[in-house]
Image 1 (cartoon, rainbow, N blue to C red):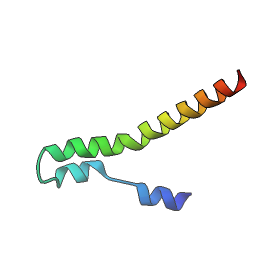
Image 2 (image 1 turned 45 degrees about the vertical axis):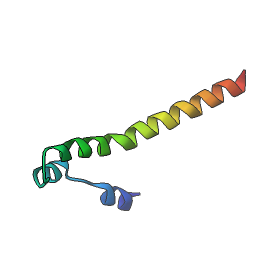
Image 3 (image 1 turned 120 degrees about the vertical axis):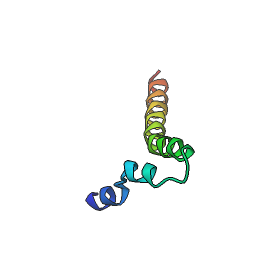
Image 4 (image 1 turned 180 degrees about the horizontal axis):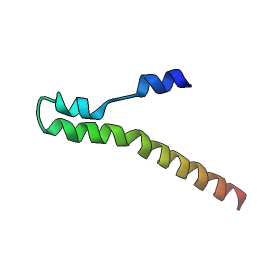
Length: 55
């Protein structure tokens, strides 16, 4: 697991400073938030599925 964390370590400030234009910062923000949003959605759907299964 530690190996995977090292691979995913990203320096966002370095990416934004070396960006070709200002719009690149928006893409970096969306790209950093997307995995979190996907995990939250997955957790919600699993919760909803299990809740409806009990009833």
